[in-house]
Length: 496
Ligand code: GLA
Image (cartoon, rainbow, N blue to C red; front, side):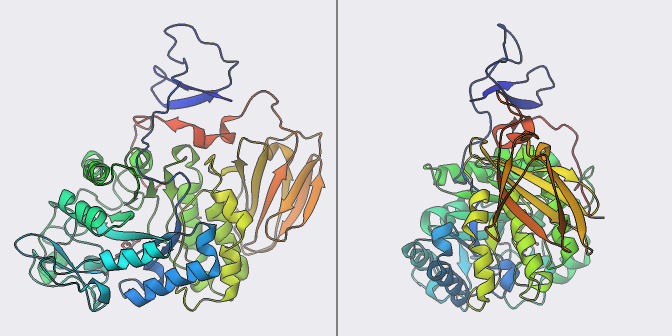
């Protein structure tokens, strides 16, 4: 078992793991702290799994569509595999009621919310249904006054309605009220909190004038980290985290921060929430999938049990990942699994083909994503066309390895035992998690990957270090300290 130590004077950058062999003297800033320094609130010991309405329906969500997806999760066995969160995204709200500020639900699309009485509307009947199915319920809001659909889906029939104030459905000025409503009254278990309210309702803009919104000087300036107020953005999310802790003292909630990799969220997301988006919205194209993958793939040190990089919802079911593209579907899923991304399905599950259920239901691939040790896969080999990603499973006796062809031509790639941190002189057993076939090699093995193909194996062999561990083998046990990355960064990686 490894020990944890805090690198105090070493610019307080890392809480590191060292083997017991590491000796320390009194007053040694590298002495083992013996405690975990990271935030432990919320309930996401493994990456959240489930379904989200957004990529399937955008704002044209309704109760039948959501409950239909929930029913398919249960009937197909996906729920038993761990797909338990059923998350409503943007589009559910009607308005913020004048007088008491209570949010009202759009009952023409969520019929069971028309409960009447002094509350007007309630999601309790809806969350009760999901809970009775053994599932969990997720809701969506914005950290500012207005939501993303109010800037980007202006054609939508499901935008908030009414006066300027009634259409301010986001959390700003209502954090405790709304969080209590969602979690104590309505019984939600998961919340995704977007950030358009801090970025898109600019003073003097056409949007604000034409839609008669209250202008908000931007705390996030898209594309400019220097003109983004990182501290203020973080503080907004911290207020929500505090309200959540009060509303759910048992820690039974998930907080998903949706600031699209901006405001340096990669460095502080783990201290505030359970997952944080690392990039702009995924679109159903190969290059978008690559970009979003890249935005999280090299941030393994920031993720671990309870806190995860979020390259966005899966886009399986659409465009480059539709039923005509089975290779791309498997790749997208395999990559998200390898980097401990949330596995949130987002197509119309009522009408999807069985082949998707087979992919999403691959218990071996789901299992590596849900491995309790929580080590995100690490890129062990990188080139323009092929990548090798290696993920430690459990206590390190087993590894998962993905061989990924990013390009549109066949790609040769050689897997070395050393990529796996396994001995080059002992046999390595590979079990293909898609075909279920096994093979062994010693030293290295050459593969040719089809265009866009990802092979995923479980690998076992003799460990390279018999009495130690490489840091790249245990990223989920390392806590990059709260002030570890001092230089705010813009969205760092762009697909070439
Ligand atoms: C933003 C988010 C998306 C989705 C939409 C809803 O674009 O990044 O995931 O929630 O808003 O409007």
